[in-house]
Amino acid sequence: MTKHPAPDLRDELVTASRILFMKDILDGFGHVSARDPEFPDTFLISRNIAPGLVTHADFMRLDFNGIDVEDSGHRPFLERFIHASIYRQRPDVNAIVHSHTPSVLPFSISKRKSLEPVMHMSGFLSGEVPVYEVRDHGHVGCDMLIRNSDMGDELARSLGDEAVILMRGHGMTVVAPDVRLAVFRAVYTEVNARVQAMALTMGEYTALTSEEALAADETNSAQNQRTWSLWETQVQNEVTR
Ligand code: MN
Image (cartoon, rainbow, N blue to C red; front, side, top):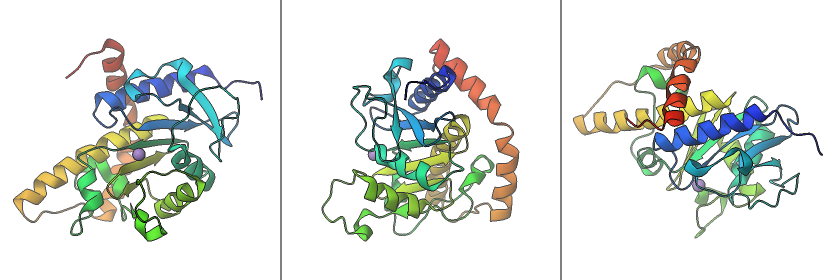
């Protein structure tokens, strides 16, 4: 396979990676990927490097078994199977973010409260946000990481048709039809988690109904370019809030 994907997708992933780092979704860990439209049974993801340092030259193309189809020589992420399995099982998904975002983590471990849409920007959380419990799949005493295709497939099945899945004591995985919407959803999953946690300290609160969430999501999906333009300019200018 010698043909290379359009360079703009790699550039978009660099921007996405830097935005997600700037917004505290990713830190030294985590990753964002995109399905390659030219070879839709493969996806682009950076080599094993901190997301804030990713450049155009760091990307590699993997297949749905997590194999580097171009023998780039790059060292891949251990958890590449998260991406591989979801792309295989969800043809509608073209971009994926996996992170260990601290404000989201409490909802992955709480026995009392699930993450749910509490504000209009996170209507994509409508329905039930699933939690992947690694122990339920027979992985007792493991290091919590998605280390192989079997675990990736378990995660993808647990995700079902949803946009976000939490991973108990580990993090979250966010999926979308394109890179920009994946970034938007990752950012607003984090914001929603903070708002919901704050509301919980105040006592009872009112979440969006599923009808409200779906309607808000439809509106916001058309507004995505505004936030992308702002965040892209911020990372290009290295402007911080
Ligand atoms: Mn992880």
